[in-house]
Image (tube, rainbow, N blue to C red; front, side):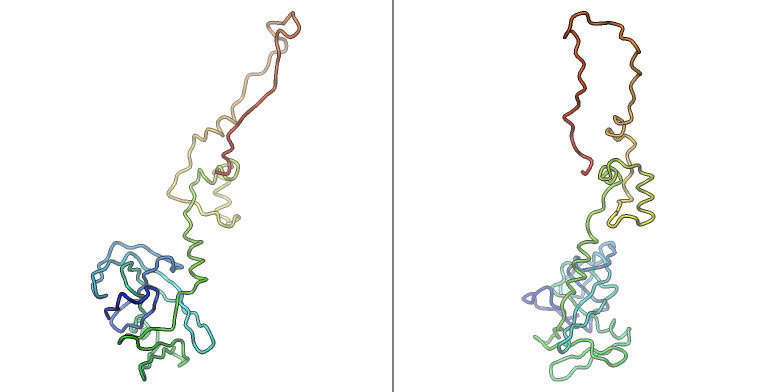
Length: 229
């Protein structure tokens, strides 16, 4: 794998014949991401650690068109000074690269042009960038999951059984529950709301003789509002 100069922007994509995998240094770019145990990678100039892999999309500029390509099994290496497109991976998918006059041309198995690049410092810099739509989608999907108790409060202290029904049947958009969390059985608000009192007697045991001696008021509050978290 080529040792790319750190002076180049980290979001540049280079064509590389030495790497056996596509490589990205931006975890936010992934639309699908799978963490892995730290795996040493020693062929990008300096020792680095692969922290995961997944899928992302990049946009190639071809003539006046923008062609979007989805890359799978892209290694995530935070220390990588640039993003790399593997020639061997392209070849595995029946693609090919033509080099001529300090330029490279990427083609698919039908022979259609899918990307361009040109030589910069003995390396082939691709006319490509991360697909912004994919990045926005990955940011949305990476929002932290909410616990059972948090959703319970947000839905006005709905029962866990009802929450399970909503989640299982996909009835609420964005209802992402942290399955590692456990619903609490001691919700203070629910316990207080379900408390009952003894019936009032038909007649008072002690009657007041003087007007104003005993005053009954029906008041309530103030109360904390925490249902919506």
